[in-house]
Image 1: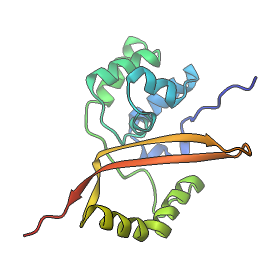
Image 2 (image 1 turned 30 degrees about the vertical axis):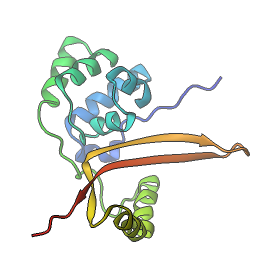
Image 3 (image 1 turned 120 degrees about the horizontal axis):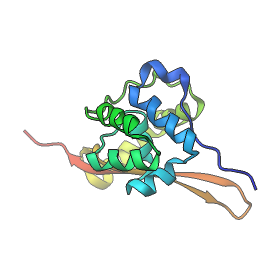
Image 4 (image 1 turned 90 degrees about the horizontal axis):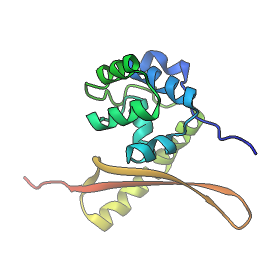
Length: 166
């Protein structure tokens, strides 16, 4: 039986990631955990947990305690992680635009190709406004069709924020 492959620290991003990224990814690799396994322990969505690893999401003190436990950090490592995660996320600084990594580029390409279509349909259905990326949730699922082909399903759920008339 094949073992599950896990995402590990991408050293090409090292100079653009916060120091907790290295700490978290190293511990994740040592324990051979997936983001899904860590998310179950934290009671959060796996995308949110991955975003924590990349410095793109906020943690609570409870998250930090659970992370230290599930990742098997010793007292010194856990205290270091507490210090590293005490601040605020530094969002949006990880990648170049347009992205070079093929999968991330495809997501960017989807917005390039369908962004105005999404906007038009969202405006027709919800009115003049924008979808929040703050009051927001997302998840990734896998589907398999009748022919055995694997399909990625990405759900984006954001609160609709109507523009104010002034």
